[in-house]
Image 1 (cartoon, rainbow, N blue to C red):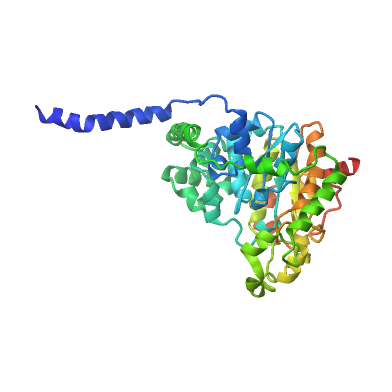
Image 2 (cartoon, one colour):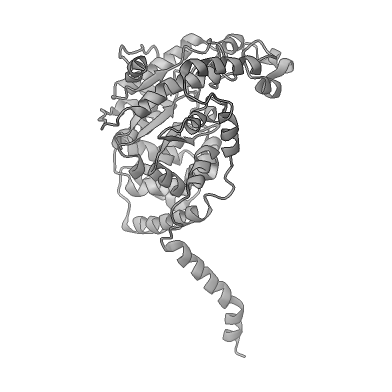
Length: 433
């Protein structure tokens, strides 16, 4: 037997398998229609694979699922949570939860790139937390948890030169996860300099996108957390018919029962696990130097607003409070917090984003917060007073007036911004209902 034949017998099957694998991932595969149960499971899973993926989100947004962007507050699935209320009372929409601990504006901008067609002229809910607006802004490690190369490639191949594009490219170059691929890195450098991609870069990235999309089709459902039993269990506690007064009484009862071991109105489980009396003394006045008024997050947030504006998405923004008793104990300045809220509101309303549920002064209300910074029983019920009429209202095209000033460091570092004298459309709508 010749040496060539021996080598072929050894390495031939490996080579053939490799070629077949490449072909497999380059062919545009479709896994068929996603089942209703699979979409429901994905919508409440908050799994990173779902957040990073494309196919499940696209399928969901083409149906009756509405993206709810946010962070760790979405994980607080008590009986008044938006997903539980929509499930219990058979509403014509289902929240698709997108966010978890550490997810901020930059994370949401890139996950939106996978669903631009499905978002166009639709509705969305966006919970914007002042806690995101720290001196350092988006944590790179947290960003990496929710980022995928598919998001980057989708964006790079459709990006057109603009202030927003150059800014987004530079921000992604700052993130280790964004530069993990050399091809992606050099494409980002090209966009950041205002140049067009070469034909070779475009051809390669299109092939790369096909492979990544096929991987997503095959693997995005693997390891998906099943929170459906939790949703069903919490829904079983609710009154059979939706009535605000009954739900308010229910929320007060749940809050009363769940906050018996501390003076802050924090849920018993959270207090025992995260705080307790042993650690409290170390947290006294621990937040007195926190400042949310100067941050690179304002420019990252502008990326999100640019994307929502380009797709004419009708958005309800929710600004949550902090637990007032906890803020007083840790020394967190409520004056500073309200200055941050004013700055966020100015950035929104000056560009035509007028659907704002400003809950930032409600942190002292009874059973409004579940823990130190996350909405709880009455908090979620108040959110529903905005979400319910927003979803029932007939959708209409929205035109925004974007201003690239909000990408500048001047705006990011600006202080003493006054609350604009603009009536929130969401606040007007809630009074009608």
